[in-house]
Amino acid sequence: MRKIKDVLRLHAKGLSQRQIAKSCSVAQATVSDYLKAAEEAGLKWPDVAEWGEDRLWQALSPPREKTGGQKQSPEPDYAAIRHELQTNKHVTLQLLWEEYREQHPDGYRYSRFCDLFRAWLRAQECALRQPHRAGEKLFVDYAGATIPVYDTGSGEARPAAIFVAVLGASNYTYVEATWTQGLADWIGAHMRTFEFLGGVTEIVVIDNLKSGVTKACRYEPGVNRTYGEMASHYDVAVMPARPVKPRDKAKVEAGVQVVQRWIVAALRKRKFFSLAELNQAIQELLVRLNDRPFRKREGSRRSLFESLDQPALRPLPTQRYEYGDWETHRVNIDYHVAFDHHWYSVPYQLTQQEVEVRATATMVEIFHRGVRVASHARSQVPHAATTVNDHRPKAHQRHLEWTPSRLVDWAKTIGAATAELLDRIMASKRHPEQGYRSCLGILRLAQQYSNQRVEAAARRAIALHACSYQSIKSILACHLDSQAIEPAAEPRPPLDHPNIRGSEYFDTDEDPNVE
Image (tube, rainbow, N blue to C red; front, side, top):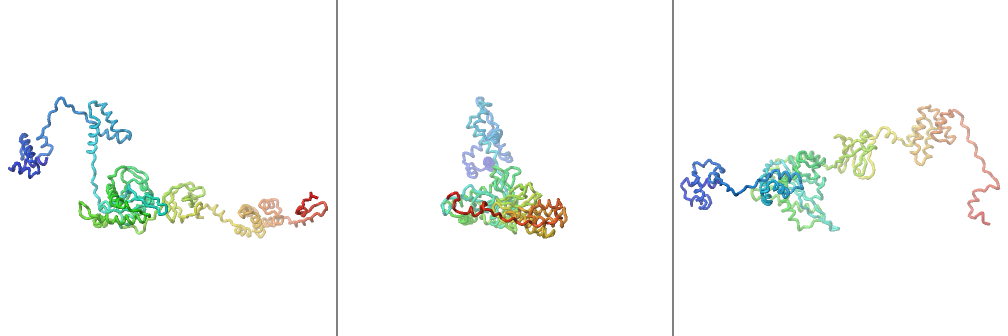
C-alpha cells in the first residue's frame, strides 16, 4: 500500500513513470497498473493523502460479486477446536474434522481444514518482548546435553549434567558440570554462580526442576525448603517459570543452545577422567564465549556485564551458605528422632510430635513450629544415640544416676550394716544393676521405719545370710529387729561309716563293677 501512495504522490509532482519506478524500486509496468487503477476509481493524490491502507485498497479493488455457482464453505470454530485439543489428550484433528463434516457435509476437506486451523493458531501466537533491568534477573537451568566422564579403572562412562546461568541484561553466562541434577548439586551450582558473578541479583528465574520446585503450579508453585533457605541467605527471590512455558525463561533457553554449540560440541572429541578436569576445560571455553563479540550489536557479553549488570549486583553475604538437608519426622516414645541411621534427643515434652530436622555436614538441628528445640554435633556412628541429659524426664534422670557407689553412700547415712547389706546384694548378682531395685526398696523402708530399726534389721539379715529386700521387710514387719541375734550353729562333723563311700570312690579310673 505504501508503494501505491508513493506512486500517486510522485505522479502528482509531474514525474514520469520511468522516474517513479526508479524512485519506488518497482517495475514500470507496476507503476502503470497503479495509475490506471487510480484513474478508473477517480482517485487523486491530494484526496487520498490521509487515507488508511484498508480504505485505499477497497477503493482501488472493490469486492467482486460472487457467482451463483460458487459456495462458501462454513468456517470451523477454531477456538473450540483448540479447547478440545488442550483439554483432552485423546482428541485428534481427524476426529474433530469428522464431527465438523457431520454438521457441515459440504465443508472443507481434511487437509484444508488442518491448514486453516494451523494458520489461525499461528495468528493467535504472539510473544512478549521482555525488558530486563540491569542486575535484576538471573536465569538458570540444566542443558539437555551431557558430557561423559570416564572411570580410570573400569573405563565406564558416567554422564555429567551441564548447569547454565544467564544474566538478563547482559547475557553474561556461567557454566559448570555437576554429577547430578540433585538438590545438593543444584544449590552448590547456584553458590558458585554468585561467586563467579561477584554478587547476587534480585530474582532467580528457574524451571520446574524437582530440586528447586516441590509443586509445579501456574499460580502458586511450591519451592523446595532447602532451596528457599539458600535464597533467603543470599536475599534473592525465586520465581519459577510457568509449567510448559519456555518463553518465560527464553534467556536461559537461548543460553543453553549457545552453550551446547560452543562448549559441549567443542568438547565432543576430548575424553575426561574427572569432574574437575571437565570443569577446567569448560571454564577455558567459557572465557572465550563471554569474550566473543556480538554479531548484531557492539560489544560482548563481558563488556555488557561490566557496564550494566556488574555495577547493579548486590554484594555477597559475609558468610557462605552452608548446605543442609531438611526432613520431617515424628518424635519416638523415647524422645529421640532418627536421622541418617542415628538417633538424636529432643525435649521429652515433644514425644509423638512432628518436628523438622535440618542436617549440615557438622550439625543436626531440630525445629518444632519454627523454633529450634535441639542442636547436636552430627554423628557418623550408625545405630547409636546422641542424648542430652536435660531432654530426659526427671524420673529418667534420677534412674540413670543410680550407681553401686551412689547407693552404698546413701546407705551409709543409715548405718554401716545397711551399706554392707546393699554391697552384698549387688555383689551376689551377675550384674550390679540387677540388684538396684532391691537396694532402692531397702532404702525406701527407711522412710517408713526409723534408721535405727533398718540398721538393726540389716545386721540381723547379714547374720542370718538373708540378704534381700523381702527378708528386711519381713524382719521389720515382725519386729524381729529388736530380738537378740543367736550365734550361728556349729557345722556338723562329716559322717564316718564303712558303708558310706566318699568322693574318692567315684574319682578312680577303674570301674568298680569290674573284678
